Length: 422
Image (cartoon, rainbow, N blue to C red; front, side, top):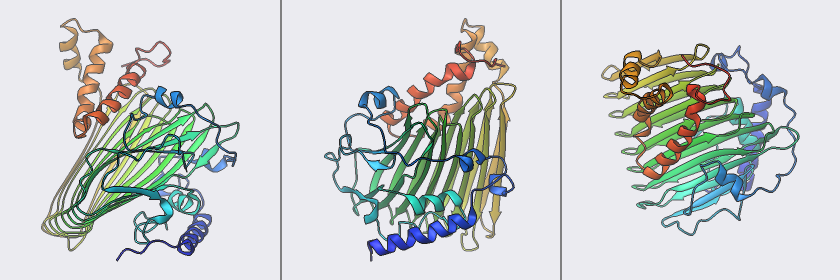
């Protein structure tokens, strides 16, 4: 039976999370989970509680990622933007305030007891949204949830919160886009919790394209019932420091999970992806592919864990992490992990770090293609293995268009880029 979270229950959750965050403090590079990523700048920042400044829709459209007409929820600095929110196209789904999420979803799916940023969000989230798809509903149009962070004279922190529930046999697409406006420092500390009922199917796309002065820390966690299918696409374009904790618990027989990730980073960007696939029940397949394209002095970190519990016999899990290095100073760290307690399973993982193939470049150039264009063609081909997994062509086109604007910076053909290409 679904029990809606009461105000007292929400207040209690906030109090417990606040106490836990104060006990944990900000992580440091002495913590194993944060060894490669320093958040000292976040810990030292004096975040202001100033109100949001008015924004123009043209500013959002200029990002190239603001969705067109359709089911759209816009949150500015974590608060609902009524003017730009349009839910008239929704059929079979309701979008309500986050406080109306059920007790077994809000604060119950995403772990926060040992995760400082998730605990901070749980203590501080403001309005947020609860996307509730009724049992059996097949939502044909995507649901866009756009998070906008605005900046001011002092650093500003926002704590977006999204809860998604799909009832038995329901199907939906949810796209979360993270944008920032202005040149000031912002921190987005987001948590998205997902509960899939039996035989439900969710395609979740996350597009992160915040400004260079931004920090982005996010937790995405799903809990899957039997025969459910969860596809996650996680694309990171912007921000100075990005940390994504992505996880799913396959908590019912024949549940299926696919995690895909793509990072494009240059300058001094740091993008840290930690994933956990928790196989708790038998006969569950999972497939994971994360890729990074790095230029300048950018760094990527991939820490992927596949956990197969004792009861999860007949698990079939595959994990791949591939990194493409475009400059001499870019770095990629990868740490795939298998933790298996069952004896009848098929689990594989693999990781690669490399540069563009010189033979392929020679082949393209020998046919009159300029060097920069040849680089971009090969980068497109590298990214396509992830992007082609996005079923919705309109979403894929948004991402590809954004990617094409970034490529001159990554290949060094942009006049403003200081670093050379290899």
